[in-house]
Length: 176
Image (cartoon, rainbow, N blue to C red; front, top):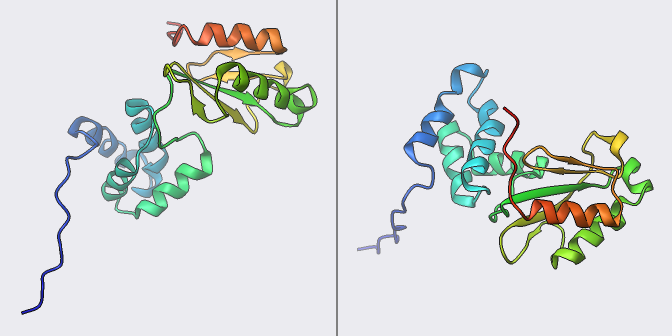
């Protein structure tokens, strides 16, 4: 009698039913389930502050696509980390406009001051510092954007220091 293949133990779903339903509710608004990939990733990111592998697999199952297709979308945009983010995430621009005005050096300064590398989160979990290729706010170059909508720039080292101090205080509620 051949040995049976081992089975994986069942694991608890990462996406709760309310989140699954929010994703399903988008189906009629899009031409295909696959087209819901990006909004679904945003919903998971908003809920968990990251998109772990299990969440990618569950999104793929809901959308009837492969986890690799979800990962392709996730990695193309670069805004969907697999590890949890800090309370606030800030992108420092390094597009040509910002780079020419010192954006790369300001990113390095922000990371050094925070004790992290770009893409990492401070030990206290308050701040994730990352770079963006373009924020579309060249008139503020060199510029930064917090994930709660705050725009900073034009920046210099003192401006970066003040920005980091402000961001470590937490998220700002959007204006009413």
